[in-house]
Length: 92
Image (cartoon, rainbow, N blue to C red; front, side, top):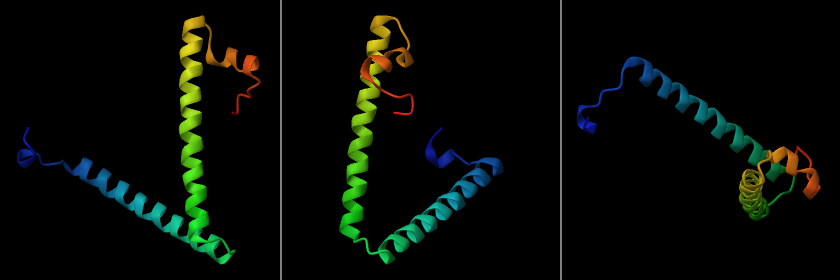
């Protein structure tokens, strides 16, 4: 169907409204958390640097998880079975 002929039903519209409200709540909570950190003496630049480093860490961790998964498939074992070999904790 073309976008002009698409009319969401009431249920999907209600779901979208709920999702929007939830995103607004999360946005407000994040704004409050930022204000709290700023009041504790953190600078915006410092917070942005930490966020950037967290994104980089998560990307590296995701790549590591992907490689462990591929190695597990090649060896015919579970990823969990590889953790001790690389001194990893299940919480890593």
